[in-house]
Amino acid sequence: MSVGAPKIPVTVAEVTEVNDLIKRFRFVRRDGGPMPPFSGGAHVVVEMDDHGTRRMNPYSLMGDPADSTGYCISVRRDEAGRGGSLYMHHHVRPGMQMVLGAPVNLFALDARAREHLLIAGGIGITPFIAQMAQLEALGGRFELHYAARNRALGAYMPALRAAYGDRVHTYFDDERQLIDLPALLAGQPLGTHLYVCGPKGMIGWVRASAEAAGWPRATVHHEEFLAPPVGVPFTVDLAASGKVITVGASQSLLEAIEAAGVEAPYLCRGGACGQCETAVLACDGHIQHNDHWLTDDQKASGTRIMPCVSRFEGRTLVLDR
Image (tube, rainbow, N blue to C red; front, side):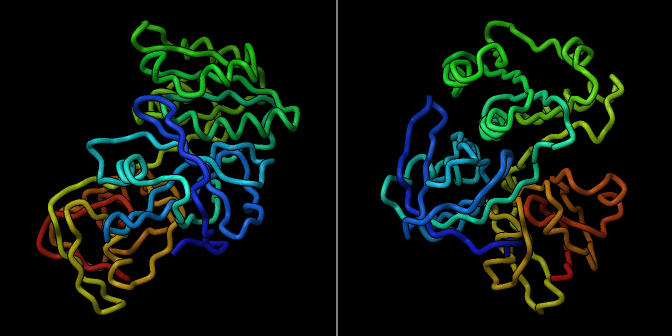
């Protein structure tokens, strides 16, 4: 179960095709009341009933935090994924009733920063849209560097340039435009904080470059929700509840635990927050650790698992659930 406020029953108010890969969805409360407040960088978990399969995917809130009339998210279609993005693209229509988790922020702006350097890649722009609206309202200093594969897939670029002018810098892979990251990092004033959201390779590159340039770890922030991978079905013993479950090929371990009626905490469902971390009581096989929460030593020990994104191959896996 999620930690915090109750879930939010909503109606889909708008569905907008942003480009060939991305659709934007706007939700309003079914009772007509205001949405719970959130801050830039927050996400919600969207619950889906995909023809009998329950899916719960996290998406960054991209609206203005000052707007309490509704929540907006953008979803990039992934043809090779488990089906959540395809469900959103092919089945969600205005007027549908859905359920959202309460907003959670694992990628908040640091109030101590004198300036904010934002680096986005592709759909990773979404949390920054809310963050920039928040910073603009508060008079905060920021600049955005936003890379996309091409101009057609540069979601929201024209609107961001119109709103924030020369604080927005755009780059296109097909035009061989690259962020000059060493120069960018070296030219920042003292007290700047760095934020990055986008593909895994970009996040790793930015974090490694910042470390090499001597940036304190506390000033570098990143967000990456990992999608649970598909794989071979496997069986798990849940020792505390006395149940044996089978995890399907396109089902996450966390989803299988929930389907068995066993409560498990979560915040992100994407391997980032650590909330669903579970003790491994016995393991005869190989745990496929797909998270970026556990340390390398913890993964090697085989004593912990993040059921939201990790899988198993072998004979026996016993968890403390």
